[in-house]
Length: 133
Image 1 (cartoon, rainbow, N blue to C red):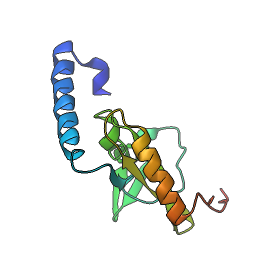
Image 2 (image 1 turned 120 degrees about the vertical axis):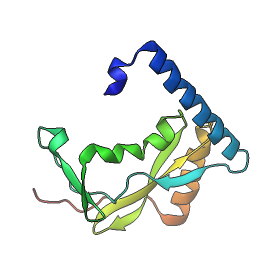
Image 3 (image 1 turned 30 degrees about the vertical axis):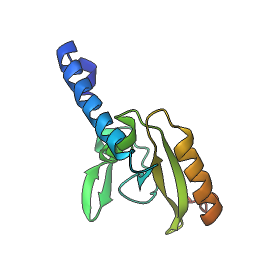
């Protein structure tokens, strides 16, 4: 939400940090085609649809966290503007577990192709069983 009220000066500073981060990723991709990393800090979970999102909590490693704290993980790819593809790898306690594949800037086909190869080896998406509310 801080982004809604940033001054131009602060936005330029943040954009400079994004550019430096993007350069670090570019250096990494000189040696690697893609990076496979978590999508979220925990496997899938029953969703909380209560009206006040700030009051929603989720337990991670025995500690309650604000529901939206998990959004840092997708930011690994989105902050520097890199393409990423999320894929399922299996089920844990009947819920899907997956990873995100991050590729080099403007190389959207790289994570997509790796996702295709992984799917070929591990099988495709299997819908979880339906949960009663």
